[in-house]
Amino acid sequence: MAIRRITTHKIQQMKRRGEPIPMVTAYDYTAARIVDASGIPMILVGDSMGHVVLGHDSTIPVTVDDIVSASAAVVRGATKPLIVADMPFLSYQIDAETALRNAARLIQEGGAQAVKLEGGKTVAPIVRRLADAGLAVMGHIGLTPQHVNQLGGYRVQGKTESTANKVLEDALALQEAGAFAIVLELIPVELAKKITETLDIPTIGIGAGVHCDGQVQVFHDMLGLDPDFRPRHSGKYADLAPIIEDALQRYGDDVREGTFPTDAQSFFSDESRVRESSTTNE
Ligand code: KIV
Image (tube, rainbow, N blue to C red; front, side):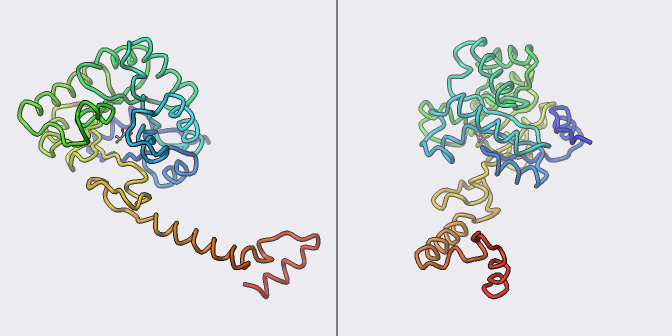
């Protein structure tokens, strides 16, 4: 029997049942398979790939083509989670028709089940247009990394009463426009709690505290794949960079010393040599 993918309805039902919703990013087939096996119900093919995969210093250079090909790989690797594809910078802000065309590519070519876009009240008409066309849309407010050049850095948002009210109004506008869930990035715990209690749709926090309905983290951050960068909010679930570096160093040493490959890792015209060597050489 085919395994059915998690739906947006299931994600919304999780909020109603008070069941926390874990989410993580993935950008490739292999990582997606691992996320799938972990039981995490939702994957974000984030434009954070600009940082952690492509080595840019922001998400601005990421293109629709980048997200389409990453989404297609993730969809091939993860059969159960709901896959949300990020809409890159300027792929939705120009006008609603451009947004619809680009969102359609993420769904039709990328195979994602939903798209995510950044912004509040100002993008609500675009969310409405996409939702009316039958797309599942996730909002993203608080710190919106595509606005980094306006914001002047990656800082906590909504710390004053007036900016907090604005973030809450943005959340309500997105819900009203038909978003199925909203990412709350880098906002104070108290504000995230208030938004989560006010909205009917799930909030998915990143650096927004424990009261959100769910949490999202960047795969590379939480697994310690960059030895020089681990944001405070990501948690420290593994420290993989030194483990991988050590394995690669040992491999390099073995190649230089001629101890790799052994006969057991090689192929012979007479394969009985492998059987002999694997009993004597391991
Ligand atoms: O691109 C991304 O990974 C994101 C998360 C930070 C929410 O938008």
